[in-house]
Length: 564
Image (cartoon, rainbow, N blue to C red; front, side, top):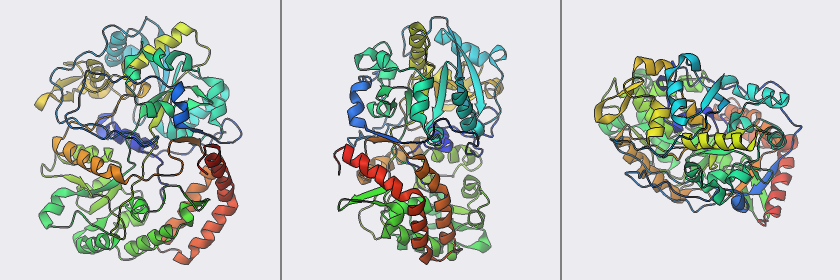
């Protein structure tokens, strides 16, 4: 069983989809390879921390919206603590992107920056006209230490342990979650940015001030602002489906209950025609059965998701779905099936993916099939009642500055990160994303940048990692933008209000380590390899091996924040 993400961008796939990248978009492909857990020693010895995000606002920059770019379609402004906004959407590429900054960001300095990349690295600075052009526009030299994304956690941990960090270091949240005591490591390795960015001190960096306050709150460790955040979207996933084939066959794209979904699966599935209803859908069944995303607080007690009756009901439903053969056999056999290929071939019709996967599917398949279309099921509850939807945290990637650098160098680095935070619709964004017009890209239909051969060779997603920029729903496919935003805005009222919303928690390492082995056991139940009656035994083992200890930690968090 794939562990449920705690946010939209808590995995490298989630991030890449979020920023609209696919295997074809980055340095030779191979972008979406697997990500292994670190095997090297973790810095620190364990422990966990928690802080209410609303209490961190005094440490964060004063928000000031950038006036230069307005989306074509509105999103939803979140009023829920720690929950990201629904970003607005663009239905076309701007005809004449304008400069966001009046002058060069840098002062001529040179800085080393460590970033991940999933795919072959581009040529180095000396042989890369894209890097040279971006650095010239910034007014400083960024020398990238591009690191294989599949081992990025290992490399990060090794450098932290050795005290050998570059001037600028990007660390994704999914790697931080693997580190036993990051709150100690962050103090030793990185500069406190509070004196530079707190409150109105952010004014010299207007594009950093344009980042959401909730994202900045997640950049605080040990009561200090330690990083520049990359904001996230609210939802970890949805049930994507082949809209063109549903429309053609008159299938129900709006099931109202688990039984209607099951009946739909039976109607669609035809192994003789090499057609199965479902790929991986079980993660979306968790909220469908109103299983809490992590914990539920009721009657003065914390109840974990595994301990709820809804969780067992969800397992029983999925066991039936697998038993009836409604899931593609490649998914059932755990072969690591490429579900985007399967849905493109019409061998599966419905599967769970992040919303960023929507664009990736269109990029992958619409060129070969102009009728290819994707939709997303409206959220529903298993019993036909009020739906529930999970949400993520407000930031998923963080950029840190090396501790001990002179003040003027820290300020120059922040100016560079201000440049890289330029939003969609600006010249800076276009240069960082596509390179130089006429050299790295040309304009195709509707003015959309299309890479040249040199662009495919030299341009890699590097500067985009350095400073977060406000999200937007992508302009590439206007029909999809409208459907995407309609779904996001309609789903927002059903977001789960959880007991720890707005509290930034570094999970106990022992508790985090329990998740994968425990959910592997539940996978065996779903796929019929263990009986449903084994749920109680597995939960007992989880409690014994650290679940009850985690409950004590989380109860203390609630008490410390006046919620229990």
